[in-house]
Length: 148
Image 1: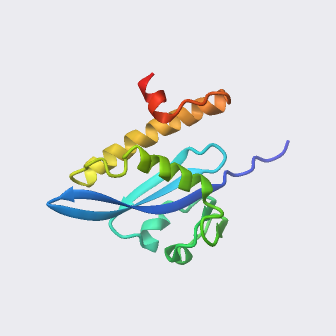
Image 2: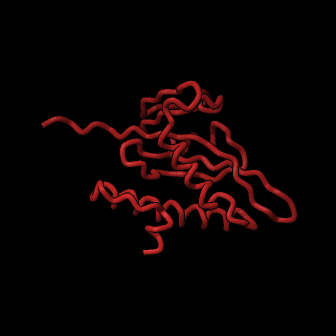
Protein backbone atom coordinates (compact mmCIF):
# COMPACT_ATOMS: atom_id res chain seq x y z
CA UNK A 1 0.00 0.00 0.00
CA UNK A 2 1.33 3.41 -0.99
CA UNK A 3 1.61 6.04 1.76
CA UNK A 4 -0.77 8.94 1.46
CA UNK A 5 0.70 12.00 -0.19
CA UNK A 6 0.41 14.99 2.15
CA UNK A 7 -1.90 17.73 1.01
CA UNK A 8 -0.36 20.74 -0.64
CA UNK A 9 -1.59 23.81 1.15
CA UNK A 10 -1.29 27.29 -0.28
CA UNK A 11 -1.19 30.39 1.87
CA UNK A 12 -1.44 34.08 1.16
CA UNK A 13 -2.55 37.30 2.79
CA UNK A 14 -4.95 40.05 1.84
CA UNK A 15 -5.83 43.39 3.35
CA UNK A 16 -9.29 43.79 4.91
CA UNK A 17 -10.84 46.61 6.92
CA UNK A 18 -13.09 47.24 9.89
CA UNK A 19 -14.84 50.55 10.41
CA UNK A 20 -15.04 52.08 13.90
CA UNK A 21 -14.87 55.87 13.64
CA UNK A 22 -12.19 55.31 10.98
CA UNK A 23 -10.95 52.65 8.62
CA UNK A 24 -8.80 50.03 10.43
CA UNK A 25 -6.48 47.93 8.31
CA UNK A 26 -6.16 44.20 9.08
CA UNK A 27 -4.52 41.28 7.31
CA UNK A 28 -6.40 38.08 6.59
CA UNK A 29 -4.00 35.17 6.16
CA UNK A 30 -5.70 32.19 4.51
CA UNK A 31 -4.55 28.60 3.93
CA UNK A 32 -6.25 26.45 1.27
CA UNK A 33 -5.87 22.78 0.29
CA UNK A 34 -4.87 22.88 -3.37
CA UNK A 35 -6.73 19.69 -4.35
CA UNK A 36 -10.08 20.32 -2.65
CA UNK A 37 -9.91 24.14 -2.55
CA UNK A 38 -11.22 23.97 1.02
CA UNK A 39 -9.99 26.47 3.58
CA UNK A 40 -7.73 24.71 6.10
CA UNK A 41 -7.10 27.71 8.28
CA UNK A 42 -7.17 31.47 8.47
CA UNK A 43 -6.06 34.20 10.80
CA UNK A 44 -7.02 37.85 11.14
CA UNK A 45 -4.08 39.93 12.39
CA UNK A 46 -3.17 43.59 12.76
CA UNK A 47 0.30 43.11 11.24
CA UNK A 48 1.41 40.47 8.75
CA UNK A 49 4.62 39.47 10.55
CA UNK A 50 6.58 36.23 10.61
CA UNK A 51 5.15 35.53 14.07
CA UNK A 52 1.59 35.95 12.81
CA UNK A 53 2.25 33.62 9.88
CA UNK A 54 4.05 30.97 11.95
CA UNK A 55 0.87 29.54 13.48
CA UNK A 56 -0.45 28.46 10.07
CA UNK A 57 2.76 27.01 8.64
CA UNK A 58 3.10 23.60 10.32
CA UNK A 59 1.94 21.79 7.17
CA UNK A 60 3.07 21.87 3.55
CA UNK A 61 2.39 25.20 1.85
CA UNK A 62 3.15 26.86 -1.45
CA UNK A 63 3.61 30.53 -0.72
CA UNK A 64 3.74 33.64 -2.82
CA UNK A 65 6.76 35.92 -2.68
CA UNK A 66 5.73 38.03 0.34
CA UNK A 67 8.93 38.86 2.30
CA UNK A 68 7.44 37.79 5.66
CA UNK A 69 7.33 34.15 4.53
CA UNK A 70 11.12 33.98 4.32
CA UNK A 71 11.43 34.61 8.07
CA UNK A 72 9.15 31.75 9.17
CA UNK A 73 10.48 28.49 10.67
CA UNK A 74 9.28 25.60 8.51
CA UNK A 75 10.37 22.98 11.04
CA UNK A 76 7.91 20.18 10.21
CA UNK A 77 7.03 21.00 6.66
CA UNK A 78 8.22 21.44 3.14
CA UNK A 79 7.56 24.69 1.45
CA UNK A 80 7.94 26.45 -1.83
CA UNK A 81 8.11 30.20 -1.94
CA UNK A 82 7.35 31.10 -5.52
CA UNK A 83 7.72 34.40 -7.27
CA UNK A 84 4.45 36.09 -7.90
CA UNK A 85 1.29 33.97 -7.71
CA UNK A 86 2.40 30.91 -9.74
CA UNK A 87 2.09 28.48 -6.80
CA UNK A 88 -0.84 30.09 -4.99
CA UNK A 89 -3.56 29.98 -7.64
CA UNK A 90 -6.13 28.09 -5.49
CA UNK A 91 -5.88 30.33 -2.44
CA UNK A 92 -5.90 33.45 -4.61
CA UNK A 93 -9.08 32.22 -6.35
CA UNK A 94 -10.74 31.49 -2.98
CA UNK A 95 -9.79 34.94 -1.71
CA UNK A 96 -11.29 36.49 -4.84
CA UNK A 97 -14.56 34.68 -4.05
CA UNK A 98 -14.37 35.91 -0.46
CA UNK A 99 -13.94 39.48 -1.70
CA UNK A 100 -16.71 39.07 -4.31
CA UNK A 101 -19.35 38.15 -1.72
CA UNK A 102 -18.13 40.88 0.62
CA UNK A 103 -17.28 38.57 3.53
CA UNK A 104 -13.96 40.32 4.03
CA UNK A 105 -15.43 43.80 4.44
CA UNK A 106 -19.07 43.17 5.28
CA UNK A 107 -19.35 46.55 6.97
CA UNK A 108 -17.88 45.04 10.10
CA UNK A 109 -17.61 47.55 12.90
CA UNK A 110 -14.90 45.61 14.70
CA UNK A 111 -12.64 42.59 14.44
CA UNK A 112 -15.25 40.32 16.07
CA UNK A 113 -17.81 41.18 13.38
CA UNK A 114 -15.27 40.63 10.65
CA UNK A 115 -14.30 37.27 12.18
CA UNK A 116 -17.97 36.19 12.24
CA UNK A 117 -18.45 37.10 8.57
CA UNK A 118 -15.30 35.24 7.54
CA UNK A 119 -16.23 32.20 9.68
CA UNK A 120 -19.66 32.01 8.01
CA UNK A 121 -18.13 32.34 4.53
CA UNK A 122 -15.49 29.65 5.21
CA UNK A 123 -18.09 27.25 6.66
CA UNK A 124 -20.40 27.63 3.63
CA UNK A 125 -17.52 27.49 1.16
CA UNK A 126 -16.06 24.31 2.65
CA UNK A 127 -19.50 22.62 2.76
CA UNK A 128 -20.03 23.40 -0.92
CA UNK A 129 -16.55 22.17 -1.81
CA UNK A 130 -17.25 18.86 -0.03
CA UNK A 131 -20.44 18.50 -2.09
CA UNK A 132 -18.46 19.21 -5.24
CA UNK A 133 -16.02 16.43 -4.34
CA UNK A 134 -18.86 13.93 -3.86
CA UNK A 135 -20.72 15.08 -6.99
CA UNK A 136 -18.21 16.41 -9.55
CA UNK A 137 -20.99 17.64 -11.86
CA UNK A 138 -22.34 19.93 -9.12
CA UNK A 139 -21.66 23.45 -10.38
CA UNK A 140 -23.83 25.77 -8.29
CA UNK A 141 -22.23 28.99 -7.17
CA UNK A 142 -21.87 29.76 -3.49
CA UNK A 143 -24.90 32.08 -3.34
CA UNK A 144 -27.07 29.40 -5.00
CA UNK A 145 -25.73 26.79 -2.58
CA UNK A 146 -26.58 28.94 0.44
CA UNK A 147 -30.10 29.68 -0.79
CA UNK A 148 -31.03 25.98 -1.17
